[in-house]
Length: 127
Image (tube, rainbow, N blue to C red; front, side, top):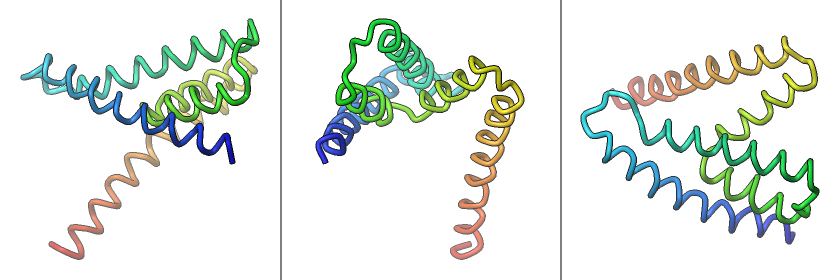
């Protein structure tokens, strides 16, 4: 129960940070056709999860509760792309090249397909 609360509190903070940081970067990149705010959030989230995971592994400085709060909660609220990056990196580090490539392809293709399907359902029902 405690870890669930830590994840929830971290997610709250991460979501607010994503909203503020992504919006600020998008305003700075006004006129760009790229979603620069999202790119910034995804890149910084991946940087943070790589740094914190390696620090935790190398130095053992994060308790299970701190990992739940920071890695799952804060970074999960900030961007789930960081989890995708970390999991893919772990597959590569473990020598699972085919699984890593499959993960990238499946996540992107299924994700895009799901966005299309959700949009198609709305268009079908509500025109």
